[in-house]
Image (cartoon, rainbow, N blue to C red; front, side, top):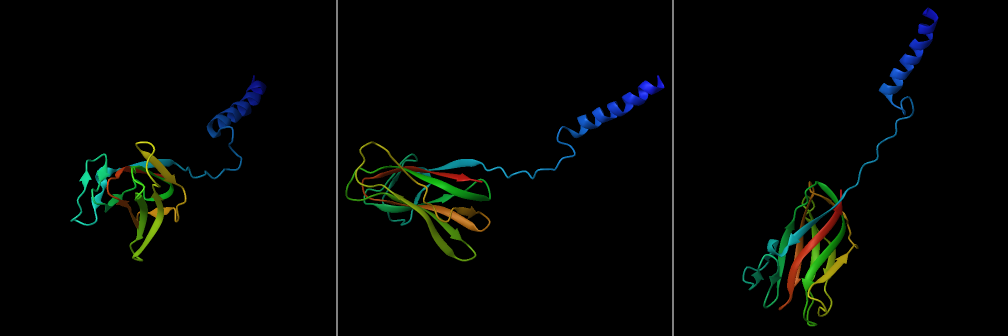
Amino acid sequence: MARTSRLWIPVLVGLLVAVVIGPTGGGAVEASKPRVATASIVVSAGAFVAIDSGSAYHNEGFYLAAPSGASFLAPVVFPVPVVSIRRITLYAFDNSDGGDICLSLIRVAMAEVAVRNQVEVCTTGASTVDVQVLDSTAISPRLVNTALHGSYLWASIPAGQLLFGVKITYTY
């Protein structure tokens, strides 16, 4: 009996160690790769305010219009401190060949008092459908660090045209 227990004790200890440590125990530990997540935020027409307080405009919440044309600003607040902008999508109705709706994403570096246009998206010509969906991935610089940068949208809307909103897709 003593001889049998001498054989089983190392086997049981080995099994116990294997269960506690796991199948990769004793091997090299791999460094975990940071996980990259993709998310989007939507800035609706209701978030925009006129640059010139004397501008006549209609902000119905789901669309923005300026009978005589005007420019508007909207803050962009990201829910995480550092993002990389991947795509910006403009939702607008342009029913005129006379002027285009243009939207810019602006990044402001507070300490440097530096303003940087990261991307601009514009309609071209009259809409053939009710809502034009225009996007761009040509963004530079992509990085926004909310500890250092503020972001906002600048929209220029000619007379008779409608801005519905903007979607910003980013990774973090």
